[in-house]
Length: 286
Ligand code: AMP
Ligand code: MG
Image (cartoon, rainbow, N blue to C red):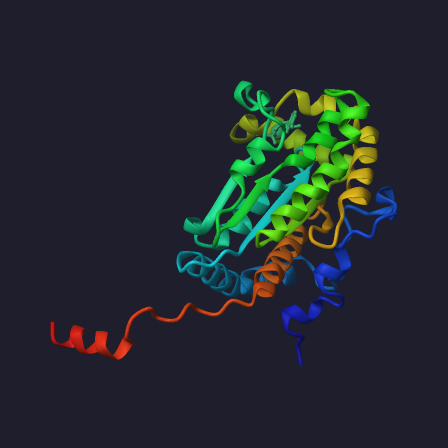
């Protein structure tokens, strides 16, 4: 008998991808599909099959928030340009009701943002109760681009690791389940994706000449990611390192992580705050 698509996970995505501090990031193959034994077509089938459950779980979360609940989920997406952050938002987050999603992309801080501490804009973007927050880049840029481009002295950015952990512990304690995803794309695949942006007029808008400069800093970014993963993977806010050369795999993997986070909330439907039978009778008589 043919296997059900979910049985093609020999190890659940959460276990296969959860970062173990001290692991060598350069040994991770960006084209690998950890835990998954199916091919692309199987992966796309399972992704589609997950949609109803993901949407149902998110709707429970939203209903919970609307009825006084305080839980929320925060999906943090980090990764170099072309790693596929936007694709995750469209294809994974896009499966749920946008009403319950609080999406925020973090770019170069604006003048106003610069006048505050780096966590200010992040705090303002945290998901409200009942919401699924999605960060496209995040507070972790403070030890990524800030470190690699030397935007702050080393002593300053080094202090951020502990601050990031304290901040996330506080967010988790307030009722938010945090899922941090680092999308790992290879230099070769990144080059291919950038070349495509230059070949297609419908992709010019995604291209930024500074993306090529980043290619000359890949070793520095790898070192920054290695330390980020090692030092900010915590019990309450673990990192998942997701190989991203195969977009279908990265999307499927994040779908599993997100589904797992929502399932862990174990939310039922809020009970009626009115007398159902009495309301039925009133409606019938109306
Ligand atoms: P994109 O994700 O392609 O829209 O690009 C956003 C840009 O903003 C990237 O080059 C990031 O490195 C940059 N960025 C994000 N956060 C920060 C930050 N805290 N400080 C400086 N640059 C940042
Ligand atoms: Mg960009």
